[in-house]
Image 1 (cartoon, rainbow, N blue to C red):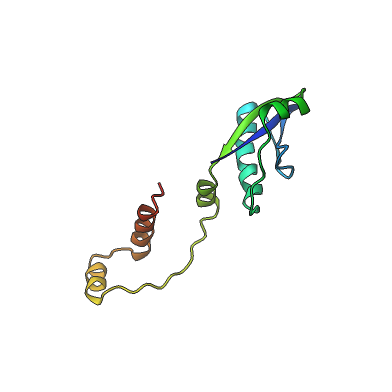
Image 2 (spheres, rainbow, N blue to C red):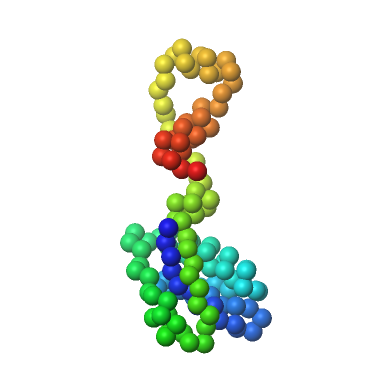
Length: 126
């Protein structure tokens, strides 16, 4: 779980959101709820290109730098983000015993679905 301070600044009809520690992450929303939701989305979008995540500033540092803005902490679980937005499937060849394959095919089981579920259980992913 990553946690970064964000600035929320009223800008006309919108609330502008910026992350001092992730300068590429800029977005806006019509109201505080939408601005916060967009902040999570843009933070994930930008951070997926990082190999090393930047160190977050403290709230007091950001408040001092941006006294005219509201400050909020925005958290993102990059693993969940990638599952949601990077759900491209990859082809894998697997080997199973013939007798097990025959039983599974007789029951019309979906091998891909079963393997995915088993991997998620093994890796303790919800």
